Length: 106
Image: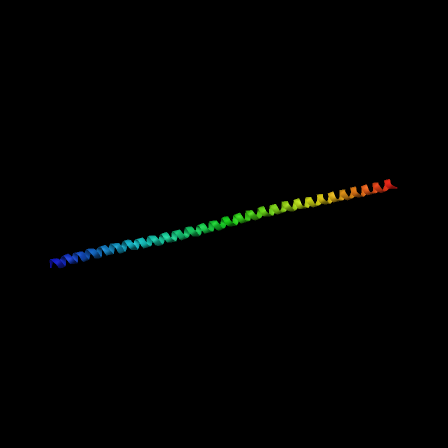
């Protein structure tokens, strides 16, 4: 009987240890689930922030692009006006030179 009592004590001890391990593993599982939710929330928050930054950067770049396009259009307009003036002056000079030559030849 002493062997049976010792065996029962050992089995009871093993069952107690198993129960403690089960409780500890249960609390670890709960902690891991909480950690997983927290990490997912942080990733979602980071994703929202990145989307917000992306939209802000896109808006700024679009604004800079519009400003640059407007400036180039103004430069092209000025160049066109100056080209027309240059051609007009050159034509006037050419006509004046031709007329001067024609008058001197007569």
